[in-house]
Length: 395
Image 1 (cartoon, one colour):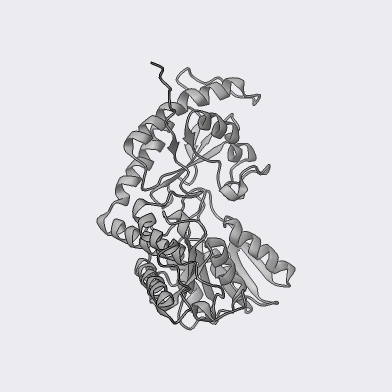
Image 2: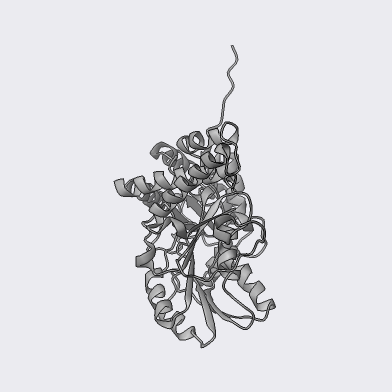
């Protein structure tokens, strides 16, 4: 009898994308075939899918603590961010953002400058946090929008969005936040946060890829980016992605229930264990953003004297999936703009890895992952051309 060894695969890159939960998939499946109608049709087939879309809208609104009518479904977080920014800003306007935004916001603001807008990029401190006073000082008479993310996709660091929201309200300026990495991980309340627009993405919270939502506060004069039918109250034209929307609604429902039960405390314990064990077992390591409030599933750790991408590849060969940062920047030659904005040297930024947990991860998987890292790091350091001081045998 022959035996075939199967490698255990451990996925700790949930900030890049999450697996669709079984409950979410089950909710979606009828809308691929049995309930296939166009949600804009007035006959039975259309009305049953319209009802499903509106139930999903209610579920997303419950997660965000807002009105269902304030939810606009999109194709994902990038579209939601772009709709918020280009739907409000006009040539000659001034926009305030930060130096550590996701590319969906960062590159949108870069494009605004080519259209004749002015953009101020406020810095972040060594923990990756924006000082609200810098936002206040950046205000101008022609400022039309402040766009500061809620949770950083690389470090998990949370920004003081409620304080920034108050500054925006006092100045009568619109405030948008990219909450793609915060939704489902920390409680959200639109009234308390004081934002006018907030973006989320399905595939970061165990719904499918290709669906997201933008919260648009009632009374916000948002101009559409797409022109066609009157879908989404004329804010986003295009036939609704019913299965994806249903999946997002179910994922939002599950996320709200998990937050209410306190399930994320267990995830935070696993995240803390990863940090504690790596910093204990591997020399010349540290946590980027340590000391700042963070979402419970994310840690970003530097491993000095090696290239992060080499460690990602080496661990992948052993069955562990992690990343050097944003999936949309993988393969980039330049170091992470998020980490360099926090003051990391290019070498240390390139030596930093992100570990991000999902609802499917177990304590046993974390234990197995931790067993792979010290020896892999030690081997790469032996092979590394980077000059380094003598490290103790424990690493």
